[in-house]
Length: 412
Ligand code: GDP
Ligand code: MN
Image (cartoon, rainbow, N blue to C red; front, side, top):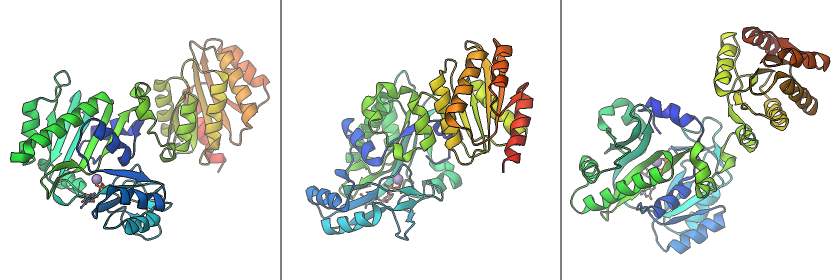
């Protein structure tokens, strides 16, 4: 998603599940969104076979990564472009062999780029016009908002920055859904008239239905095209889903590609830990999301930078605490750890015992600062003291932050 709407970026940045274009196209077909035929391939030979089966001389080969900007991307081996047109199955095979197993860098991947393990081999369409169509869940509008533009294609980011007036924003009443007159208004705005009006409205309704039914936070079709054969079709698709709703969509969960995700976050999710990786050097383990945010803030305030957000929850057991420690110490950037626990429902002595056992199981390579407060705090502190582990005890949150920042500095 381009950043015309900053509030979506923050909504999106927060653990939204992503899928590949070929999966998005499978999903769109289920909901009746017109998109060209194609299939995914994991090897050059498979790409050749798919190309043959499509029985056409208009082919497109597209690198499948969880990032856009592929058309203008460059592989680290120098090969240019993650989207290529070709005529024959032999060419499809050759192009696939140049992309699969290579790393593609685009404006959305960061410098490290992303490894391409699969390509989508599709029927290519001759494009007459490239449009932009997206549906996002807008927190401010408290509703889905449709964004449309006649300036779709690879320069939409520039359009959003330089000429935002060329983007139409339409709030959809969530109780009513997308109304037929609204779909017609969108079609008119996008200059989809005559024979194109009906198929355009059908696509808008199908996309809206798909967005709601699958708990999306973002559907972005760029480009939505008018072909030279006068069809309206989705040529590219980016879908984000609300993580918290995925329990009711096992079919979409099956689309998850963990090789595209932060390995620390993948590991944490196995143990029911709410973990978000960051790039600082002070790891923190906290119970409660609000306290975890406060802990990150105070680390920053004390001159340090947090390596993660981690909420072990109110009812964390010893195994979860141990697994949490393993994830924290596996991060090579981490120079010190801060444990900040408020014993409310859980008692401090139980937590202290969990920390002691976890530390023994993990053998800590970095200093550990612990701040405990709440029920049975005296018993908890005594346990930590008597454990003879190199734990730095802190009296309160500010003290803990100061101590952990100093410990990280001393551990360079
Ligand atoms: P992105 O760069 O990652 O957003 O990848 P897209 O799928 O949007 O492809 C980039 C560009 O390649 C599009 O804007 C189109 O101009 C072009 N493109 C993609 N698919 C096709 C196709 O099937 N036929 C033709 N002619 N061009 C295509
Ligand atoms: Mn695109």
